[in-house]
Amino acid sequence: MQSPLQSKTLSIDPASSTGFSIFQGKSLIKCGVFKPSGELNTKLFKIFNFFTDLCVSEGIDRIVVEDFKVGKFAGAAESGYAIRAMFRLLSETLKIPHTVVNISCWHKCIIGKTRATKADKKLYGVNAIKELVKLAVLVKVEVPEKCLNYASGREMVTPYDVYDSIGIFLASS
Image 1 (spheres, rainbow, N blue to C red):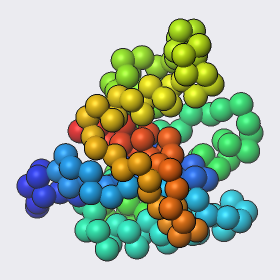
Image 2: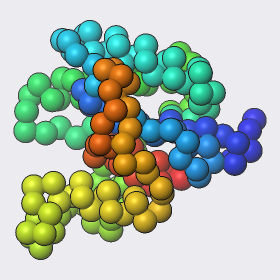
Image 3: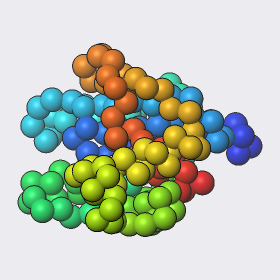
């Protein structure tokens, strides 16, 4: 068993655009997004293969995944449940411990609240909660301005999904 400083944790904000971060101990060593194209089954297959390869190549020994919250859209529920089941299967297949972190709990831990206030929305607009998470994460972790979309191979401005994955890790540590 590795010491906490040596252990590698993969933290995941799962969706059709899946943000991820890898920490060695408390240090961010890699982050990015995987946004495959195709129908749900194709996306799940691509996500499973990408993250299986990533876990093996990086020597991941802990996986942390955001819990699922049913949104307004019925299609989101189907894909949300499917992608989280896929990550559970991945962790069981690779025999890597898997922790699910509740959305409201990690938001409360990172930004002190679960919802944006009217003042937050006035200041940051519709992405208020995401901006608050980003700001809180940047106080604690040095995050690169750009990261890679591993599905397309293109560099992009680091998206909210990556900041969320870091927040999920911080709340689970």
